[in-house]
Amino acid sequence: MPFPPPSAKVDVIGNPPKDMLDPVWVDGQWLWRGRAWVWESGKWWARPAAEYYAAPAIVRRADGKLMWFAGSFRPFDGIGRAAPAAGLPSAELPREKAPQAP
Image (cartoon, rainbow, N blue to C red; front, top):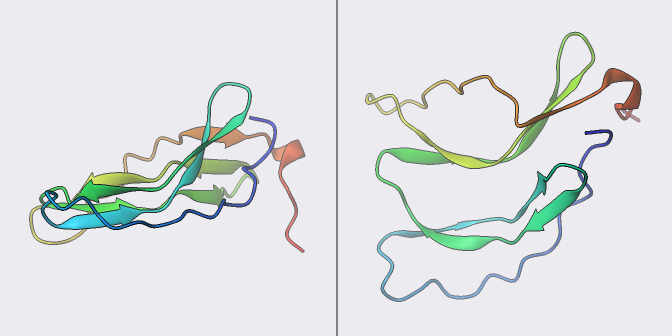
């Protein structure tokens, strides 16, 4: 992908579905879909057992490349700690196109 995602859009949070047990709101996020960023609106989820939500993130690696990780539910390790991420990026930004910090 040649550029980072746009700023987040505003989601209007309605009431959770009445029949949903332990609802949790997950904010919307931009997803890379081949040639463009596509907005995925936020929504209510039934909280998955033994999982936590890891928000989307962009991280600069030591070599200067930007890595994008989509938000997702991830399992705890069975002892109540977050399991390590798989370490595979959702997408990568080339170093020459990476935005510079102000």
